[in-house]
Length: 427
Image (cartoon, rainbow, N blue to C red; front, side, top):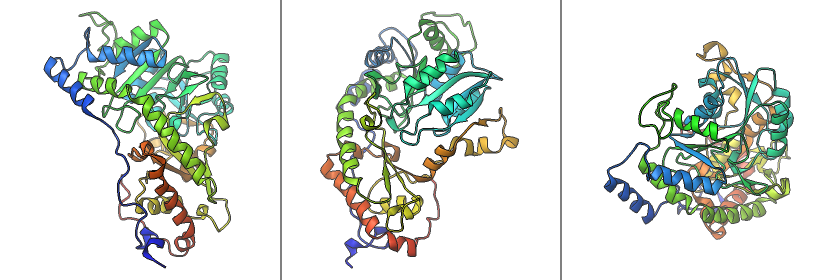
């Protein structure tokens, strides 16, 4: 057997030695925008003609929502959204059991109780049946997360929320550019939040936004991010707020990046279609069906990541019999960037799993079986792994297919002689 046929994890030559496209992306436009801010000597604050004002109006037009307030992070956006809706101690907020922990901790920081509900196994987004089961007389809101860039079922979730008179909050941290029935995520619920952290579809390293159609909510949101000062008021603080403003440098970067978002989404969609088609015949892989095949109401996917799961119930002649941790390490050894961190369902995060040691209201779990199954078997490529590989031409992504096929061809070696885990798993 030649070195090329031996898994790199077991001492062979890797499939790929050159990098894929990097993430985040930038060009001369970002340099020019940052230079303009430097020369303006107005690097922060909220003022007429600012970069922040320009980005907010541009994002509002893109989303088709009238009111956008930029803030310092996606977590800050969630905190402000909950506060603006009057969520506080004793209230319950339904949260998907599969999401980044900030979706839940924002609820806890408001003094409220996150109630974890389960996901749809095909889309990994909150299911309406699980939402119904999680509701109580104390439920004051529900947060749906468009995970990985796939829109949640906004029709069924909206119907449940409306029937119980509770606001529907969209967590769009991973879904900028996605749409449901032709309407952009962020313009579908009562209020929406975005993140512009490093891995997101547009990024300034950090940053976020709160979006709504409600003028009254918009005024309060703008006040809460600026020490409780009403918009346009030079002085006078009318409520308890935070300083969660975004800098002019960040706003300038985001304005430029929003201008190239649709072009990048088109490139990533081509890559996702190629990978879905090319990996579909490999035993043990369970690919998430194309959005239109799941639901034609998904009119655009944001392609934050390309995800598939290992089917642990398959026969012995498949990659599904390898542990997800070993599969990830084997793929990375072949030169394919993949997120190596094992996902954790929110109810199992240490701050929620042990209610006796927490300094906040204990969470509740209505259901999380599907979320836990997904966490145990998900493989994430793309920006979730810190890579811009989905922007590459499909001819480059052929190496991903070759690497997975190589792991499949050698799966018996990994079962017979599993490599020792690395000394450190911190990433």
